[in-house]
Amino acid sequence: MNKTVKILTIILLAIVLVTFSTNVFAAQLTPDSVTPIYGNTGGLENTAGKIMGMIRNIAVIASVVIIMILGVKYMLGSVEEKADYKKSFVPLVVGIVLVVAATSIASFIFNMAG
Image (cartoon, rainbow, N blue to C red):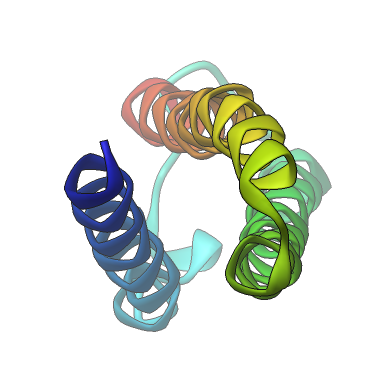
């Protein structure tokens, strides 16, 4: 079980790093270079892009901080506390994956439609 937690933590950190770095690569695409199909959406593209990026960045920062805190508590905790922390890792990982996936999918759909 201990190896599983370590592997999941490493995979989660890799996903976080890849997702966080995609914002840098996506910054080269400006909303002005994309022509909308259904008329002029104007500030909607800018606003939606900023909101999605902000949600993703906040989720990534919060997840890293929470994982760091739980990791330190796990290392310093007793056997009973370690079992509780292991139980709290699963919903945390699922929540992080859902938030990052939801914002990525919504950004992808918005970019394809616009």
